[in-house]
Length: 360
Image 1: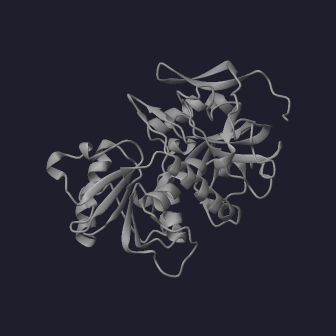
Image 2: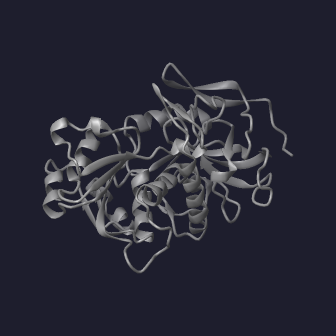
Image 3: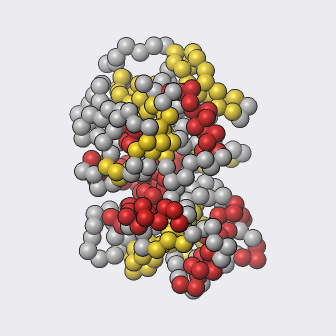
C-alpha cells in the first residue's frame, strides 16, 4: 500500500567532492523492513544522515501495528552509501529502516522558526536534530561502555569519572544528557568553549575545561589523573592525541572515537599499554558490510541489535520530554540550501547548534 509517488525526485548528490542539487533522481527502492518517507526536514550531518518525514509507502515485512502510511517518523540514513547509492537524507524521498526509526507520540509539524533553543522535542525541526547524535551517544554509553539502560538510578553505575572532549558538539550534548539520566559515572567532565558552560551544566556536566587554554590537558591531569572513560566527540588527528593524553595514568582506560582512528594515529612516544582506542560507527546499524574509503567494515549484527534495543528504550523518554534536542538553526530554502549548509559544517561556522533544512 502506498500514496501517490513520482518516479523521480530532486536530491543532493556528491559530484567531484561537491554537493550538487539534481533533478530526476530515481526514488529509492525499499528493502525488507524499510519505509519510504516524503522528507520534510533534514539535519546537517556530513553526507546526509538525519531525516524526518511522513510515511508514503511500506516495504516488505514492516510491522503494520507500529507504522502506517501517514505516520511521521525520523531516523538515521547512510547518505552517499556505495551499497544504497539512490538513498540519502538530502532528497525529497528517503528510505528509512523501520527497525531503527524514531516515532513521536503525537503528530509533529514544522514550527516555522529560524532558530530553536534547546528543549523538549515538539516539532520536526527539533526531532530531525536527534537521530545520528542521540543514537551514537546511546551506542557509546550502553554498547561500548556497557551501561545498563536504567533511567535515573539512585547510585552511579560506575564510581569513576568520564570525559567528553567536544562537549558542545551534537554528540557531546547528547552524551552529557544520557550520562546524567543513566547516572553512569561519578563525574561528567567536559572539554568545550567556556561560552557553552551554562547549557552543558544544565544538561548535567559537573565541570568544564576550555579547550582554548594552552594548558588544558595539564589542568585536567592535575585534577583528574585517573579517568578511565573518555570520548573524543570531535575525532580528528589532533583531538585524538589530546584526549589520549587525558587518559588514566594507572588504570586501564578506553578512548572512544567516532571515525576510524586507531593507536597508529597516536605519536609512538605517547602510546601506553593501559590505554586503548575503540570506535563506534553508526553506519553499522544497518547490519550490512560498509564500504569505507579503501576498506570495508564487516557487518556487525550485535551492533545493530544493540542499536534497536537502545532506540526502543529511549524513544519514550524523548516523547516524555526527558531528552532535549540541542539548539537548532534552520535553513528554509529546502534542498537548494544543502550545499551551503554542508559548507558551513565543513568550515566550522556552527558552534553548539545543529543545522537543519526544511523541505516544505
